[in-house]
Image (cartoon, rainbow, N blue to C red):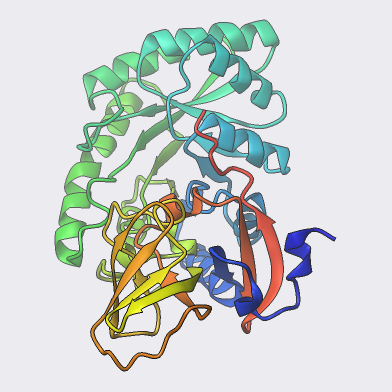
Length: 369
């Protein structure tokens, strides 16, 4: 029996710490709530693996009605396809001989689709696909205002699409635009206005392509913070939301999101020192929690504030000195960013009614190549 199997059937507080916990009831409810929403509209859901990096959760999303899975990296796509899911989008550019060779190998066992934004890359993928006798599906990534990757909308997008359509062993599917610079805006009205304004660049590019005889079958974009805005733009066909499965305190502060999804992810930690009445030290630091969106916070203790992380320790300030936590006691911490927190862990523990039901390897964790 492995160490992780040993804990199945035991109370969650018996887990060694730090331990990443998933409330299975909430996870399943979040997945179903999103599935129910998409069952009522014409747009489809292609959820992002980068949040949970766990193929079994991806399969749960597929079972609930998702049309496929979105990945951020080729390594993630390899894990997903290996698990048996065939319809996968890599919402990123795959550059260089080594990675393109891996992409072609994935294409032999899937209906892989990849984002591009320059013709040299298109030509390299086409040459490799032709040599291997496979077809790679292509989306053009369009810069709609995030100013990261993406060809400029309009004429530049049209010219790239025309070149793609002339290359062998490529199937031009459509366009992708990510409004990531908007998804976490807290005010709903402000977020909705910005989404409609920026996504119009994608719609205008689609209309230009179709006016010039190039069918656009897929229009992909969206995130958890904009799923119910972007999905209602008539031209959009699929949404790439990911964080909704777990949620975090950052997304919970985005108006309209916390009402639909609840916290499924937490980190179990142990008090290792209580040097002062107003200070608690726990065994969870920067190597198991991320802080780019602010410090994560203890759950269920309003008088406790996590004020700092070092490599292996978390420092908690106690505003009520009567708090009786002592070394050996355990508590849970709510992440501020679920995606980057998950990527620090090798496994998660599925909890139902406070009992460990399963342990899942986070097999796409660290798949940055």
